Length: 323
Image (tube, rainbow, N blue to C red):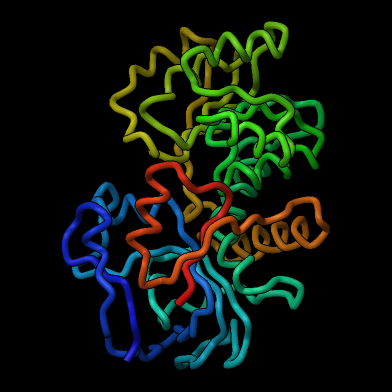
């Protein structure tokens, strides 16, 4: 048998149940991964609450993990039994063992341990596509980043600084502001009420070419007002709730702006893109330019407590669940 956290209905953290489930067997093109670490991400909350729909219930949620290949199904060529691997998606990570399509796995370099990998695959590859593909950040750019002290935020602060960009990090407390500054944010703003005015002051009225907003409903319009003409609003999360209907005429009125709602699944749908994203992430972490901060760990059985901490904004950096 395998242990897993499953949900039988959508709701609060209390719907997360620690249960025995049959150990799955890999089918054609699949691998069985014996997990050493599982990443905690805000998307897990979306699946738990029902904002994002699981394929069926009961469901094992979780998008990210690392471990070793215990078995492979027919036709698998990407990995072999014994390989150290990591992944980010699809759901099913909150388990001691799981089956996953082998073409979604990437092999871990020796220099990357399982906890670091589980803490960085989803968040790190998200940071990679955001600043290397959605808007290709370059030296001299100034960007606005919400939740700058969160998992994606701390990675993105460091990576953007490494590229020669200036980060204006938006956070919810002075302690988080200090953390963001320690990780490369040149400026920090606490709260979003006066954000456009602060960005105007910092940039001397130029505003910014890109805003990265994972907060959603509460910050959407303030984010738009931080953009220079032809700027891009990258809305990649809904921590405060989903953004409601938007009058696209605003994009024209505010300077012919661009708006995108990207996802890691799209950016890594092709295996070649997945491998390239992981390779860039491994390289920037191995070089020391980006440090992955596992600031909290919980036993996997205590996933509910981890969700409470995440939703109450008591976590910083990355959180890992230990099977």
